[in-house]
Image (cartoon, rainbow, N blue to C red; front, side):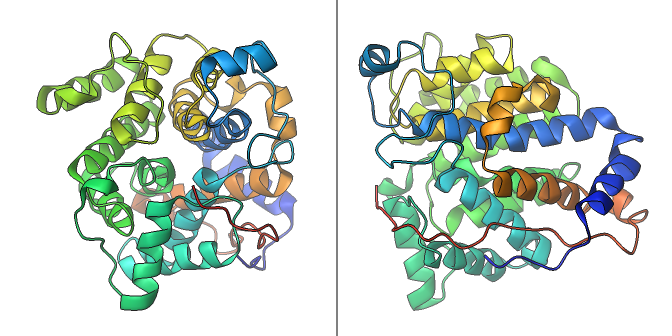
Amino acid sequence: MELHARAPHDSLAGLARNLFMDTNPTLMQRALGAYLGLAIGDALGATVEFMTAREIAAIHGVHHNIVGGGWLRLKAGQVTDDTEMALALGDALLRGGLDDANVIARAYVTWMQSCPVDIGNTCRRGIRRFMLQGTTAATAAPDSAGNGAAMRNLPAVLATLHDENAFEETSITQAHVTHNHPLSDAGTLTLGRMTRRLIRGEGLAAAHAEVALLLEYISEFRFSPWPGMTSGYIVDTVQTVLDAFFTTTSFEDCLVKVVNRGGDADTTGALAGQLAGALYGVDAIPERWLKKLAPNVHTAIREQTIHLLALRPEIQEVMPKHCPAPVHLRPRTTTATAI
């Protein structure tokens, strides 16, 4: 993705303070905690993706530092498709994607053409279908019940924080570009609703209420006792993330617990980080992890969070006219690898 022209960083920092930090610091800290938490969980979990818990213990003891490596041979602090697709979606929403599925689909095309380090088969298939046929929704299929739609949905949460109907519509629209399955829809919406309510400061009780509603209708997602599966299947992912989130009491403990279970650890780490960051706020993220996160990712997330929240009508009215355009990731130079 191309870098957009933007004002100096100091201008953006001042905008953040004046527009959000002074008026509603809790909301901003939680929103930023959710987005940076997603990226931190992605970078931490990618090291041990596809490993078993026993293998992780034998090699790392307890994996708790961002060191890169793993099957993708990442640099320390480098992220994978989870964070990159979220940033692509955020870019699309800021360019009019709230009302246009084509804008979202084209953003995913741009991301795929940048040679990402990692891309799942279902995502690749859906993006290629749009490129060849121009259709923005995949046909409902049993093999679309992966976690690829849920992992990237946070920008939809931020852009529709106080509008449930818009949240549902945007979430399903972006999901169906690649994943069209009732379980994928349910997992994506539930994790998104939990995150929205946590960012708004409604706390754990609200998160529990969303899970209870999910389990009332789809018992397959029951996670207590934890079934022990860590695959990319949306049910396994949601169960693993919810167990780690609800059985820990800090951001760090939540992420360490979830990624040390292995499997699809970059995605479970990302989604657990999203929830934990929304609950505990950005100040709860360990400084050693924030310092390791790739600087361009860190900057893009901070800027995008401000602009996505500013799509809210009540905030838009007070947005200064000189509000800088958001910055996004530069094109990758690595070779794409299918999962």
